[in-house]
Amino acid sequence: MTMKKTTFVATGDSFINRRLSRGDFDTKLAGIISSAAFRFTNLETTLHRSQGYPSALSGGTWAMSDPSVLQDLLQYSFNCMAWANNHTLDYLYGGLEATEETLDANGVVHAGVGENLAAASSPKYLDTGEGRVALISATSTFHDFWRAGDQRPDMIGRPGVNPLRVETTYQVGREHMEQLKEIAAATDINAENDLAVKEGFATSDGVDFQFGDYTFRMGKEEKMVREPHKGDMDRIIKAIHEGNRQADHVVVSIHCHEINKDRKDVAPDFLETFARTCIDEGAHAVIGHGPHVLRGIEIYKKRPIFYSLGNFIFQNDTVEKLPSDFYEKYNLPMTATVADALDARSANNTKGLGVNPAVWESVVPYWEMENGSLTKLVFYPIDLGFDLPRYKKGWPKLSKQHQVLESLAKLSEPYGTKFSIEDGVATVRLD
Image (cartoon, rainbow, N blue to C red; front, side):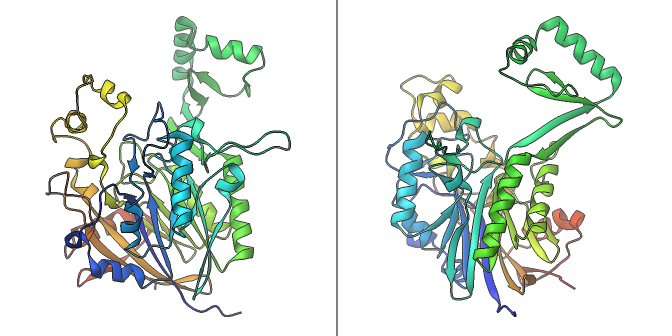
């Protein structure tokens, strides 16, 4: 059966907490987004008015936005969103439930979070005039208690995110392994874990050596090896298979802050494995986001993998409230304000995300698919106002600068992806 053309647009993170003014709204950018049938962003905030208790652990900034900002986000014509990320439970279950209610009330197709693991991991469907698209969302960056839990016949499940856990092993030579064992014996770093194994509260495979929270294994090459958790990978594959039987296309969203050695702009090994496996199993595109900077683009089996689309809207420095945990981290008194806390975190705007130009520029891809294969992929550069004060920056505007496109092309070189850059737009060469 010949399938007609289907058009897609995706963006990276939308960390929005301010109302959109007419002067900040880019109508041309909104027009590009609205030209596609599938229009995606990652919602990286919670939407409520203090309807949840602040978690003891956050995604970095406790993200809470007034529900009214969703109306501003929708002005860009998005019709589907992921929200499985490292901020989903910044305000625990109350914040999660309030956010879901707001998304549902506004008719947004959203994926990656739910009242239990089945709800969080299942495909969500977007019906368009160009076909039906299944959206699956997961995150590899989360606190462990944020994982959604399975429902049993005799016990309710747990609300949370659709997790992609990462199994990390540090491979070392014999000499280093012996040193680790000597240190462990001298410091009792493994005492509690060893007792837990003896009492049946933990398990040991007898091959790996546990050094505190870290797993080591003998190997010829000394390196860190990360792989997707098999159970999580299998569950996501099952969702892809389900989506393929119920829709024309399947799109997988993955939120990933993990880095490659010391580089945020290079995809980690497990993310490459995950994305390619998703395509192997039937996904038509994988959309990555999380590190707040761009990563490379790979065309794998004639289907696109966006390892990170950076930011679309980024306003983490204009949250209006923060819990005491944030102030305590920077040794601030009870009389300190949000501005005091943000100044402390950025050392008066001398470090952090606010002073990294790469955080404040990105791209918006538009692509077309026919018969399951990519036939067109173009990137539009956007600027989020790096030079503006923190209370003004973070809104996207179309940019005429080629710098971000050239940077994207360089990051994509290891994947063999080639671009033609002309008139402020980058087009992927598919020949």
